[in-house]
Amino acid sequence: MNRRHTAVLLSGQSLRLCLVLGLHIEISDAQLKDPALREHRCRLWWTAYRFDRLWCGRVGVPPSIPDESVEIRLPSAAGLPAGSEPDFRDAEHLAMGVRLSRILSRAVNTLYVWKRQQTSFSERVQDAVRSLRDWAEQLPEHLQLRFDKALPPHVQYMHLAFIQSVIVVTRPVLLHLYRQSLTRQTQQSSEAVQQFSDPALSLATACVRYARQSMDLLKRSWADGTFLTFDYFHVQFLFSSATILALSALLQGTGWANDREDFLLACSFLHQLERNGNFVAKEFTTHIDALKAMLLEDAGGDATIGQPAVIEHPPLQEFLNFPDIDLDFMETDPQWLEFQDVCWPEMQSALGV
Image (tube, rainbow, N blue to C red):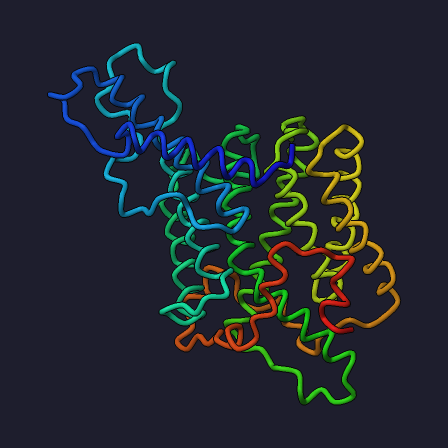
């Protein structure tokens, strides 16, 4: 229904109710002898927790309760009685989903804020990237991303959520880079335009690469019929990936022509979803159509940024290897925060061009 703030309220109330019931506290065998009931109790808590973190992260508000208040273990299949398997989903999948929602919530509430933080922007980005890298490295084999065979829908969905988390962390740098390219076009001298460091270009590169991967997964999902027509997050993944691909096309780095075609394909997907009655797509098409007009208008121009290596620098996993990472120019120029929920019809006026 695209009622994001209502979803935040309802998920927050659910988590508060679980808190009142004490579901966030680990209990012993002596308190509840049935191991299946203890596991149900555990999974009920983490389901409410995950919804709260997902929606708070999407809207950009603090989570209902801090992680320090949670004492219960993550979901597990250990100790469950024989024959109870049909009652429980894959515990490893649930646990990895909880960890990912926690990473996303922390990233949003440390990177997309106006309030001065105790650590620098560089440190916060490094922390988020490190958490995402560790999450990916800890994935069990049956949950890893494979392109040589069909993925179960829940595994594909989890990887789309992971890619979205990467985009959320890396998008500020790419948006800042795009704004610098607009500045270059409107100024006679290019000396005033900031030159980006290798770590910053690495993050911008990763943002584009992961958007391409997301679009590949979404095209596969659309083709095999697993794209959930009325699911909010599937449409959000599509819109988020499309905006990054459009930025890549506007910056005209390596591979921009393919990104432009995939962006136009995403536009057609969103319009079809809108015709089918998807309220989320109805909102997003307003922005995507304005961005499409911008892209088509710029098709004959030169939007390059003078640093074509945006799509050639090391990917996300190598970002942490740089000995000297300085992204603090993002804190001295916080206007990129306005892009958290980009309204493309107002984009150029907001940037003063």
